[in-house]
Length: 145
Length: 145
Image 1 (tube, chains in turn cyan, orange):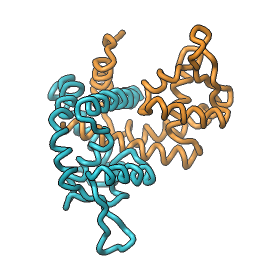
Image 2 (cartoon, chains in turn blue, orange):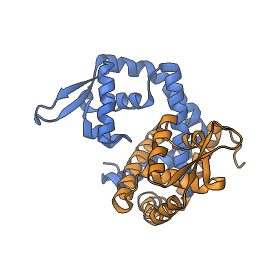
Image 3 (cartoon, chains in turn cyan, yellow):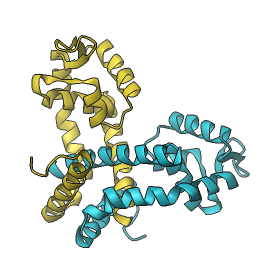
Image 4 (cartoon, one colour):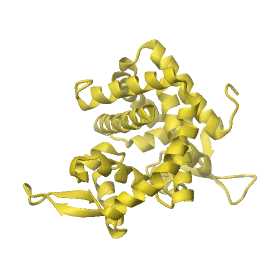
């Protein structure tokens, strides 16, 4: 319980610090940045709405609202799924990719300052392994797969 | 970066699992449960709106909406601040305390199943210490104070 509560508090404090610094310096909401990052890493730089909901803290309706705003800002476009005519992908636009590229250095510095610089290499390894194991157990993936 | 991303993913996966199980078995949103928990631990079982925003992922307007719903459900009441006539506290009601008491055992079992049971004692200690240090550095508190 102590480890879980410490993780919750650190996550909340870090999210607030990262959100503040990203909005202050790069004028982009942290939740938009995270979606751009997920899309940039995805095959074909696009993801289904459900995949985005599964990878973030958003509910499906929250993802839809969020993507609406990002489409309006030109950072994301909706692409109809070829195999499932009712389905849509959210796809990264060139403007979205550029926005991510511009905002990344400041964001990575924030993470290093508030998180990385507080950890020894051994602590960082322990956290990376333990947290990956927890995620794998919940999502049912085989560790290392 | 690996430790940070693993923490983000684990937090998202755990929050989804805990939210789902709490709503399924106890019919209460995770965000409500977390506010009840914070209020229950606070001196006088009440907190200012700003203190709630600082301890959760909510924005100030998000906290206000959330507390509105909890007041309507009878779990929380608004109490005017004696020293600052414009300020309000959110205070736990007896019904809120009872709801927290009823939901806690199932929630603690969920945390143990998805988080605690995945960690060795040493990993749990490392995570608790490292995450507390990160929170303290951001919030400016002296470690151990």
